[in-house]
Structures are given as C-alpha cells and as structure tokens.
Length: 233
Image (cartoon, rainbow, N blue to C red; front, side, top):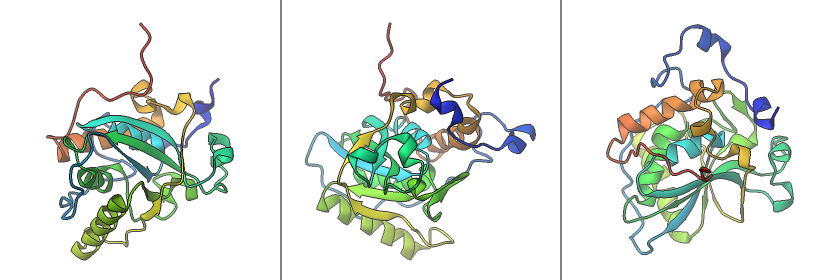
C-alpha cells in the first residue's frame, strides 16, 4: 500500500450525510469574493515563479493547475532546509517547512496580483493559524515565499488592502518570507487531485475549491490542468 493512503484525515460524517460531489459546499475553506490587487507587478518577464503555502498541497496545486497562464504547479516544501525536505520529516511539524506549491506562470496572461487574489479567495483560509481545515501543524501554515522585492511589495500591499477592507472577520495570519529554497515533494504527491478525484479527503476538502475557482474566476479557469507528471502512452 503506497504512502498516500495514510496521508490525511477526512470527515466520514459529512460523507455519510450525503456530500454533493463537486459542489462548493462543506469544504474546509469557503470561497470569499475579494477585490483585485490594487498594486501589481509590471509585466517584465515571459515566465515567473511564485511559491504559495496554504495547507495541504494537494488542493493548492489542484487549484493553480486550473488557472489560465499557469505553466506548472509543483507540490513541495519551503521554509526549511534540503536535508529535512521529505514528507515523513515535514509531517513532524519541527522542520520549519510548510507544504507549498511552486507556480510557474506567464505574467502576460495572469499576474502575480491575480494569483494572490485567487489564493486568498478560493485556495485557503488566511485567518487560520498553523492549520487548514482538518490539518493541524506549522507545516500547514499560510505563507507567501517571495522571490523578489517586487513580489514582497505586491504581497504585503495586497494583505494590507484586504485588512483595510475588512475582507475577513478574523485577522489575516499569512506570513510573507523570502524563499530560501523550494524542494519538490515525492512523485506520489504530484497531481494528486487529478489522479485521485474520488479519494475522500479530496472530495470533501479540495474538489469544492475547483468548483469555487470556476464560479468566482470563470475567465481565469481552464478545464485541462497543467500536470506535473507526464502521461505514458
């Protein structure tokens, strides 16, 4: 039995109550309609990377893979060192790592500011400290690992914009930190949402996020995900 079958808890009671497959209800995080970023990056490069941490990387990766302009979204670890960048070690909550997703995107199609809007709107709940939905621990914290001063400026500006607007009832706890290293997760974690759409954790916690992306950002939604693993013919 492969490791991912021991991966996450889920909510049997919700499933027993009759969860509606694919509907944006009973998710760990609900969608919030947020304003676009007032401050954004100028379009300079054809390809840019950004790293997002917002709980279990299965759902974070799954959402960004369905965003137009995203070339790849890789599940991995950020915030710690290379020698502790493994799922078993990160799961102890003692490594400094957060489950993260490295997003490579074309800023002429989707800006960093728009990715932030999606991240805070449908990917996760930025008011949960060191947890997301059923998952607890610092490895599930909300964080933006920035790769440039410009990304930091846009990220901090957007968080302040949301705070001033009172977008959330509770304080935003998202960290903004420089990216010191990103370490891809094990292959069995890649494309997990697409490969295992009936896995109970995915059904309860992550498929509603895809539906919410479709509802809140219809012009940015792509039906075919940008997968990491290549299908063998």
